[in-house]
Image (tube, rainbow, N blue to C red):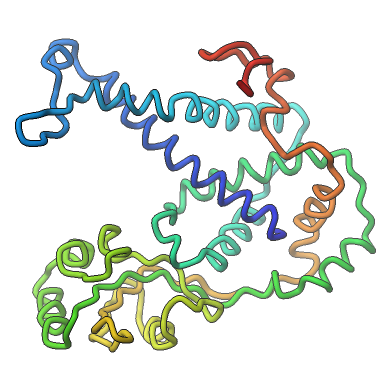
Length: 303
């Protein structure tokens, strides 16, 4: 997969995070009995002021309702059009895209790391869309091979490690935290309570994936991650001038070198997309799919 498609996929994934959250909350709300709804369940209090669940859901709808519904429609449209034109997204290619996603994800984007099932579903949708918009574009074997030779580095993926950390200001405090972990405390809970790293602490210490290509964290982080087994934490290690960090290895993604035959279909789509004038957008298929929605007819979806 070329860089353009990869970052497009990541953009789709980030938008879908919001869609999933709001859809889940709305589903919960719809299942609340009428009697409970009438009591205006409180979701937050600020001094003597409260925020009801209904106010909260209304605000979510006002801010994200239209975009969330559009995302849900887009996913259905892509699947229906793929069935109509016999377009497939092979499991092998989905797995390749998952590895590529993890190998290039900036550790500073740890908030956007998705669970495996959601990631695969969104990558499948994106692959189907790419196949749909490029199905009539012809690309020569010579062009694909030249592209591969010019971009071999894109297909040589290093080992990637997803890690979490707890940062303490002193070695003594880090050792106390290590002892609490040994006594059975949960890593993510301690990270939220104790870690002085403002960015990762709210995420339970999760900093995403690091590899040899990462520059955001010291080299010792990668060396430590290599020495750990999954779900194993390290002893406290120096973390620049911030103090000491305890690392937890959550997942190791083995590196892979893809040969031309492994990625030729991805390359074909990449080259074909560069020759398409219209943007790669599921909404281009709305009219064909006869979409009707709450916000208007099929010709009003861009409003």
